[in-house]
Every structure is written in structure tokens, then in C-alpha cells.
Length: 404
Ligand code: ATP
Ligand code: MG
Image 1 (cartoon, protein in one colour):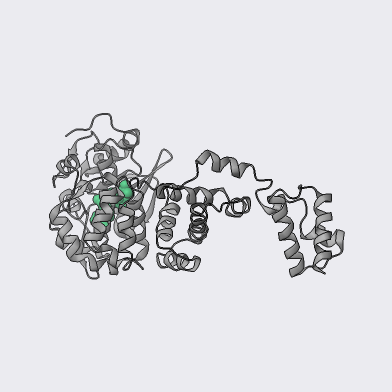
Image 2 (cartoon, rainbow, N blue to C red; image 1 turned 180 degrees about the vertical axis):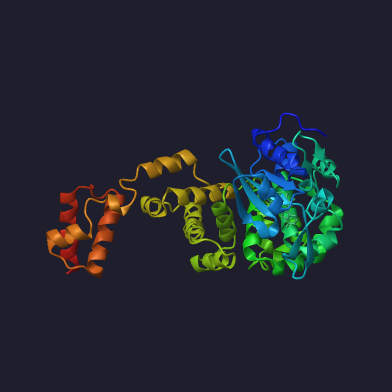
């Protein structure tokens, strides 16, 4: 097969491959970008594989960076672009089901393609667009199969993350996992425990955000992979519930976790515990904690101005996306209007602050000051007070007198 009309990213990189070939070595495009080109998808990073050893690659180009030299990757800077060039390699003696003990550089393309996870990811492409397909990856792309390269059983034993990659690609591409490969996942699922949570996390989210998360979730369940993910062992019923939604198109990681936490009936602390177990960022944890609570309020029709204000628009959108999946979402235009109608969007927009009160009302800093400010903030947000300095000062004075 020859791909004509190569995407611009490849056209731009051709010169780099040409330079390697000029020096007497082989060079190919490999990995996801080749797969996505055959599928006529937009490509992101262009990966290049070569028979040249890293030291040889560095001699060919003026500007290189040793980005992953121990794995054979050198980054070449060319016309303001960066290309990752990786020497053909084999990965030998996996001792702990996660990472190769060491990589060995080789001169043979076949050896390099052999170590790749799935047949659809083991394609190479010459600079002229000719596809090299040593493992029937093209057939599997055409038929929509996820199939391990070589003996599935062995490949998952070497690196257990590949099982998660298989289910994530099934979701992203809406492909079916081939029978033998699926059976090998089921058989080796427990090895996932040995894989770093951060790596599982990446694949899990790509699975949920993919084109067909439902089919992939079924595979995730039947193979028992879920049991070896952090805190998922007792979540089977939740995933089964997710399978019952007619439309399970999830737009963001925030929404994915919010849906899961909401269905699990999680308290704030349970949300935090789950997300920490998955080694999530604090930003994600905060968004999901708040959004999960808001979904509940949307369902109970208890949304009010104060909730809109305290949540912030981003978290409202996450919550409403989830509520929409669940069938009780608010019309997005209405959500936007309601938010836009808030008198202020955050407390810094208030015409008074702690400093003004201390200065004008001769009040000392302390818990009472905080209480009064929050009370005033609430009245401004809910439209009981106009956001004007004199009005707010007067109201604050009254509050202090009431507290005394
Ligand atoms: P994406 O579009 O998500 O980047 P990708 O296939 O490019 O998908 P990468 O993680 O970027 O995935 O990996 C690039 C290539 O490296 C893959 O296409 C595959 O050939 C190989 N690869 C990646 N991870 C593994 C693994 N765990 N085992 C074997 N080969 C792998
Ligand atoms: Mg990639």
C-alpha cells in the first residue's frame, strides 16, 4: 500500500529521513501517526525509527538533544521543528511485568516492529508513503481488530500495560479485541497490579473519552482488568450502570471522574480518596469534588444563584455535562445565561473587602470580620444588595451591630 497525499507533518519531516538515508541508514515513520494516516485521521506526533545508532544520528544533524538517549531516542531540531528519532531496538528480559530491563539497539526494522504492542501500531512507512506491514496491521485496521503482535500471552506478560492499551484503542477506534488477544488479557489481568498507576491512568481516561467506551468497558469487565485498578474492585455495578446509558460520550477527564463518583454516591472525602489513589492532580481533585456535589443539586433541582457563584463556570459545565448524560441536564444556553446574570463572579469584584471594613468601621481583623464579609458577599450575589461601596458599608455596619 502506498499512501498518497501525505499529511503536511510528514512532508515536512521527509528531509530529516532523507538525511539519515543519505548517510547510509534506514529511516521510517512508525507508530501512531502511521496508523492514524491509514485511517485518514488527523495525526499528532510524528515518530521516526532508524537503523542508525544514537551516536550516528547525532553525527548527521547539527542540532540534536539527548531526550531519551538510554532508550535510543535523539531529538533532532530542523527548521524550528523537533523530531524524535529512535534507533531500532528490542526490549529484553522483562522481570517485573512493566518495563524492559534493558533495550538493545538493532539494525533490523523487523525486530523493532516485533516489539510493538498491537498489529495496528506495528506499521512503518517509507518517506514516499509506502507502508511496510509485517504483521497484517493493515488487515486489522481495515477489519477493525485489536490484535497483539506475536503471542498475546507472552506480550502481556512482558508488559502488562499493553492490556490497558488494547482496551483503550478498542474504545478510541471503535474496534473489537480479537478473541485470542482478549483471552490473553483475561488470563493475565492480575499482572496489571505491577504497573505504575500513572501509566494505567492515562489509558483509562483515553478509554473513557474514546469513541466507543461502552464496548471497551465491557472488555474491561469481562477480562477482570478493572479488579486490578486502584479502588475499582467493588465498582463492577457502577460500570454496568454506565453501560446502560444510551449516549456515553464523555468530553473531558473532569466529567469522566465526576460521572463515576456521582454514580458511586461518593462523599467529598470518598472522591478525594479515589482520585488520590489514581495519583491525580489537585486541580482535578478539586474540580471533581465540587462538580460531583453540583450534579446532585441539579438532579434535586436545588440549583440557586449562590451555587452557580461558588462553583464557577468550568465546574458547572462539568456537572451539567454529567447531568446531561444522566438525562437531567440543564440546557447549556440557560446555564450560560444564569451564570452571566450573576452580579459578581468572584469576591474580588465586591466593592468592599476586609481592608475597607477595618479602615471605615474601625473593626479588628478576626473571625467576626470574615463572617460579616461572607454575609455581605451572599447578599450581593443573591441580588439583595447593590454592589456599591456606600451600600455595602452600611449593610456591614448593620451586620456588626447585630452580631454584638
Ligand atoms: P497515541 O495516538 O495515543 O499517541 P500511539 O500508538 O502513538 O498512540 P504511543 O504511546 O505514542 O502510542 O506509542 C508510540 C508507539 O510505540 C506505538 O504505536 C507502539 O508501536 C509503541 N508502543 C507504545 N507503548 C508500547 C508498549 N507498552 N508496548 C509495546 N509497544 C508500545
Ligand atoms: Mg503517539
